[in-house]
Length: 332
Length: 275
Image (cartoon, rainbow over the protein chains, first blue to last red):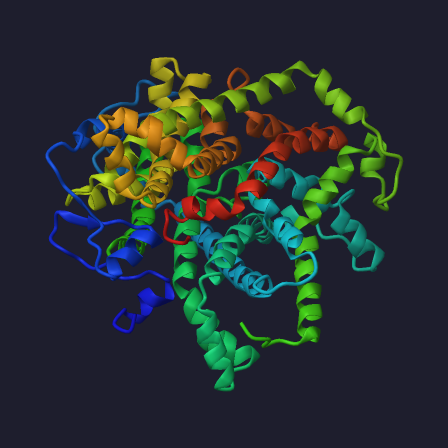
């Protein structure tokens, strides 16, 4: 254990001893403890192993098609003049779709909106996720039930949660919030007209705080209690315990949450469609929503495809980081 | 761990814990409440916390034939995609977990990377492909999309469960003459049934709540409940109590599934990076 790198120890992962490449140690606690005392519990790679190609082929083949065909088509359309409403427009467009898009102010506004939405929701979910993980780490009365209530919003379908907030809570006439502010003499906020982006952020954060909490609560269970005790004996209390022991332990799970959420948050769609439809003006038009507008309302296949390529590039930057993080976990 | 915190800390934690739980759950609770109100009670100001509960909304939802059509679509599409996904993923995860080669790791990461492709980036070609092949607004079409978009998660989750089975058990089976198919059917699946069940539930949850493809590729014929609920977003859909009843019915089964499997879901949701 002493030789295990710190970051791996925090993850509660043991470095598995490596023999020659064709021996692989089992993963379970039993086999790895056997391996430690010297029993060679490894699986020899033998010639009678099933042909894994045939077993992997359906999954790999289908995913390959799923990835390559639409992607190639998007790329191809993005260089075409192609509008479903006007069949007379056709032919090779060169970089015109891109040129038009990049000069189109709404594109930049929508990228800005996307970043604001993703950034705000991420910060909110991380702050509350860490808070909940710490609070729920130790027993209190009815903790398990309270935990179920905290994670519940994650399982609510996006259209339902959008409509709960839109009709029952944020509605300027009959909503609960309007009644509360009116009773307090503060007047009424028409949420989706006056603070559209903040409203969307609240809804989406409400849906994703449970995700961050769930992951971070699980991660807290692998926190080394002896290490905490040692820190306690060294005089660490409350905040310093949190800052020097808990937070470093949560660092990697947090990065996993950030990256996975980013992928899903870049694709937020239903919440916007149901509440603001991208408005007022283009105040809540994200890149995803812009592509939907171009493709399925304006039928501008070329322009929508070019915007799709931009969305793919944006997501790929994120994906590169995610793959690296997960890969580090896979490597022994 | 030795007693590090005293009793006052437990009370303090309980207070914060329960406050956050109630705040987070409140919107769902409020919807649940609205579903038992009359339409008039639902829009009354001040909002009613105490009222005579009525089941008329649930009755009204049940009488609407289209609600059942949408619910059936949701069920068929989620289960169809989950079963199809498992059928494709189990052999792949078996191969990856027990017969890893030098390329297995890269293959798994590549599968994961397909999940990173933003759906909206391929919206246009998917729509056109579906239109040209007649898959637009069909259950088959949506099952295909759901299966493929969840396949990486299903493979990864199964892989992480399979890796915990000692190969020796399968090998003993092989010595007794069991081929790959029999090993999977008779040994691996019974041994990892809880893991497979939580994988299936995660897949059902993700399909049931999916709202991008279902809103864009389906309409009245194959639309699942997400689309049904979205159709109420228009201003004339002001039957809040009935909408709440329909929403309650739509989220209840998934909420229960989620609660039952919350601990195992983490693995699937983080591709095995957090256990």
